[in-house]
Length: 255
Image 1 (cartoon, rainbow, N blue to C red):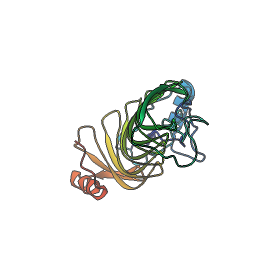
Image 2: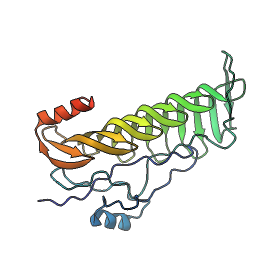
Image 3: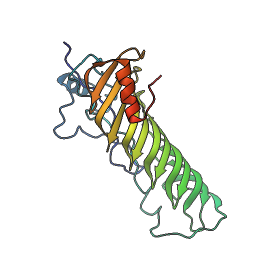
Image 4: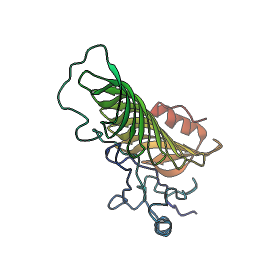
């Protein structure tokens, strides 16, 4: 028997200002997902350097796969870029938005502005700390479809609502992991696919960034599969059973 080490799926933090620095978050209180090996690695490498830790192989039956990341969270966004970039209340817009290049938003913005000077339409914003956003705006907020490149190296491409990742989108994480699926108010929510950097693939349902219910994992060659409950490996299962789980989530079998 193998002892589980604990996989660390990167989590989304409460959304903060996109032109503030992405900061680390400690493990959640009472989280037992990190093994002593992981804690030792984190201490030896230092919080700022331990961006990727070893994950257990799929044979582990007691692996805690949903532990908080010990060194950094997902990129952060806040509703406003700075205190005076967004103006409260409803604005009235005409049909002819004007183009502008301005440094008045805590960084460099090039794109469509309303008559009130709010970002509205399509535009590119480069924050003072290097975070970038290119996409749709509504009432001075990131809203619609857009691409954000964070100073951590992470990239999000997908839907936004009121400056939050919301709808469907893909997060390309700097360490090589990829999440594609649903988002709500900045957190993974709904069904999604998580591709580990070593090629293994999970399908799961998320609620406020945590996995819930039944999911499945495939090996990197797609020839083995495992049942997940709340993100934890329970047992090896047939490929047909894994396909059933994917179907129940409305997701295709990973290829």
